[in-house]
Length: 263
Image: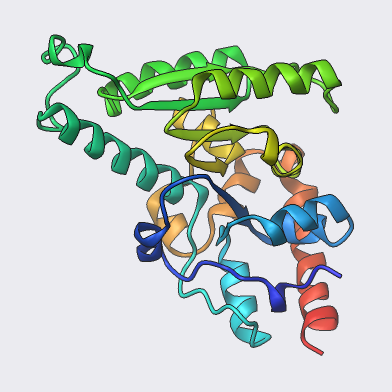
């Protein structure tokens, strides 16, 4: 039985800096993924057995306090927070290796950039979104090498699809890997093929962040984020797509917390 009460959840953004180096699977949990995991065994396993689980939802933080869960996260850690921390950390590391200031563009230090570059791989989403990510990354993280892979757009991958994805990731052997195929597909795929990924880096499953970073989906303004209303902003922006997830889903989350977790 998947229970919020017994999960190990990261406590704060500050704790991201203490995560060990090496191969590490980082997933997120919010009200929607909690509801889904209660009826999806493999997804529940992926969230429970991953290396790090971050509370991507104010509802998770508050629920953990109310039910006196094993973990007591102090704040929401959005997928965007994880993304920004990891990317900025790798950019600083690359600048240190190149002995340049992080404010200096890649073009201005082109001679130095012939040295080996740290690589970030984005696996998931469409070619259009990935192209926008490459362009944005060149401006925001100019010293990092960006590699992308767009998998086939289908509910389930064939064995050939899976092998092609795994081979592509292993061939790149990135210093940071982002998986973006929406939940629960991204978490289940990464968890199921974890042993086949011969890599040495942090791996984050952060589907929505691909669109936020590419600019194809507008993220809620800071005020909405600070007041735990980012979900409402997304609902107002895309009511036809999000009403079931946020109206029915939030009600279901409250029911589960009150009647399945509290007692």
